[in-house]
Length: 478
Image (cartoon, rainbow, N blue to C red; front, side, top):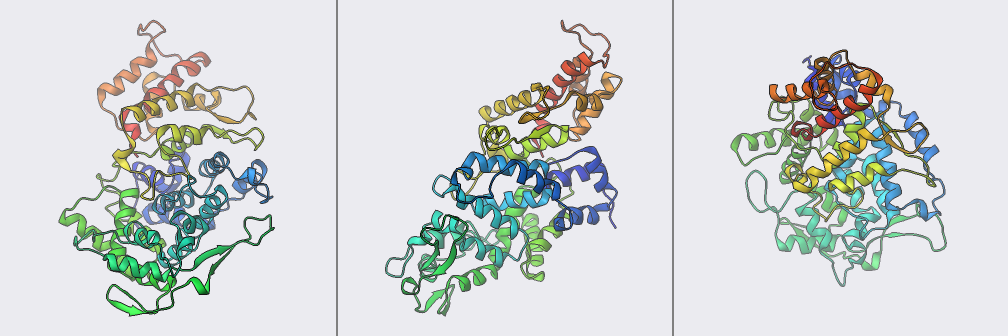
């Protein structure tokens, strides 16, 4: 069994989750590479009762007739609570990946249906791709978002048929060969296969969950369709199966997964070989997303120097990761007096959950960083570390004095070393390390003294040190 270093385990937890404490990283080190991956991947074996108890206490989704509970801010508060407090981080990370892949948005879709789609993505996140794709295609959010409910035999709507191929499965051109994956005629024929797809909700039923996916017989085109050179009386489920079995789909999915979880891929022959290698896994494992990602996360590519700190953290990863690494407390509060501060900061940094900018989702990696959003990241770091409270039941996010004291060492040098490890571990150059040590050793006038880790120094200087580290360029990478 391959071993795993602390640096590699921290990398694994950042990518399969949202970072974590030193104890959580050490626990992964003790399992070895395959064992660490499996411990995160097989999340259904992890008891998440404490999170579910927290959710039931702090959120009132029990009365589905109360639509006020299903507003965008409340849904963000709910999901950030899940991401911060879950013991199954990969469950939430995969849900986030699919949310960006199947990018529907509250700008057009009712909040209740965005919530239901989130449940669908979470439930099917590691299924066969065929099953996930079909579940999403039949989900009310997608039927509304890409106008499937208006797609009828006498007037086919091509929106879903087009995005199904371009964005959700294979792309316009094959990512390895560069050849066209489909024609305009394929779009038209596939649109016909999905005619009549709707969802039914009984009039007068106050429960928004009481919907049923249906195919309206007199609105569905039952005639022969020709797709990718094959002819048959295909319906939407047939098309999903055909698409999931295409080589172009396997390649496209591998590229999407790699660029979200590993590193950006180029057009080089080596990177194309990497795509082909994992596309083979997709077919060998009967289109299993679980086995595909397991192969990726246990691979040498994932643990390469190119991968470690090779991506820019998304706003969600930055916000949740900072809370988890530094051991901050997050109390979401209740509907009447809740705090969606993490969701609000994520929006401030450029990522509004449940409302991606368009059907293509968010632009990843360098797309997260510009002069404005970088300054906003510094503002978030400042907010998180300066927020103090004497009431532990107050809704919001903060770093307790006791937590900072537990991370403070006897000398400035050891304290800097400890916090660079906690917030990474980050490998900074000697001048940056020296500047951080000098900051701790300086008095209020900037004169160099000797750091004394008393309560006043912890509350002021150590808090300031955390802020400085969170503003480093190295901290923006995940």
